[in-house]
Length: 142
Image (tube, rainbow, N blue to C red; front, side, top):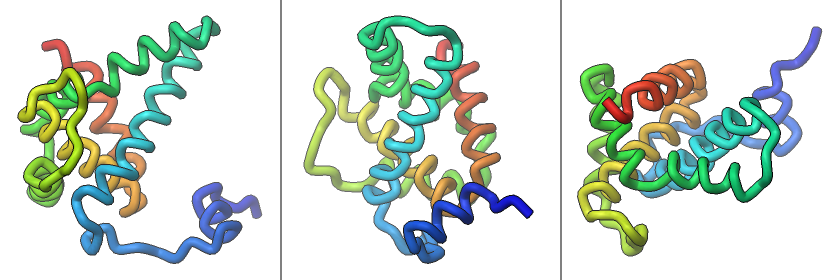
């Protein structure tokens, strides 16, 4: 029987199960930022082969705070009560850094979005992460 890649990863690196509810919203945003960035890069690379700086430009536009803020606002009504609570914890977290070229409200909304992605990832609900990111990408400009 072939091992699930998720289980193989956890086994290989001896990663214990975690309860994402026990993590700070900024820790959730930290892992969520990486997960979301990897998703975007994977999508872009799968579309066509191009120069790396073109990938970077497209990815930068999709991972910037303003775009993430638009995305979370576009899917807000689709969030469960639990997801909304995680988003709000991330949005309201006191961060000591600030993205350049972003308003405070966009930066906070983006942090909430990343916290939600991180929470769902650590909860191992990858199907929901994919569903929300797909919806958000489709609706971000609406």
